[in-house]
Amino acid sequence: MSTILDHKYETWQNEADNVNRFVVKGRIYYKSETYECWIGFWEMLKWAWVQYIAVFALVYPALKMLQQTLYKARIFETIVVVPLLKQTSPSHHMSSNIS
Image 1 (cartoon, one colour):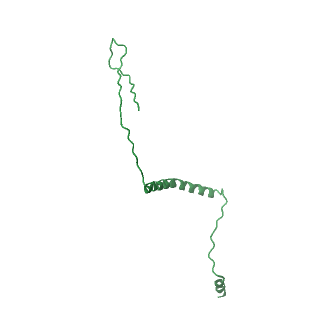
Image 2 (tube, one colour):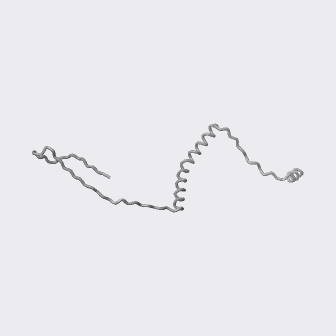
Image 3 (cartoon, one colour):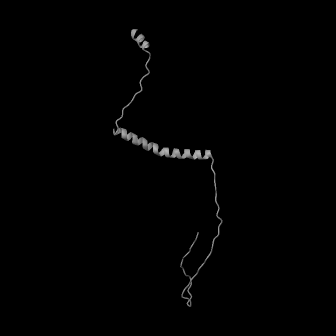
């Protein structure tokens, strides 16, 4: 790391000296430290869920709007399938028709 201060602002003048200089040289020593943090499985799982929910909250409404737009504009051919009703046994139908 290095710092250079170069600010030429003179406050006095000396008639005999043509070059007025004020130079400061210094060194700063600092100790390099590292910080390590080991997270556990549950902590990592928690943050994975947070990220999943954050992305889901942004993507789901956009995809829902896209889906509605595509179906309203009839870009894709769609067929609505209705599940069949549960059929009763044939003997039950016959007895209800007789009476």
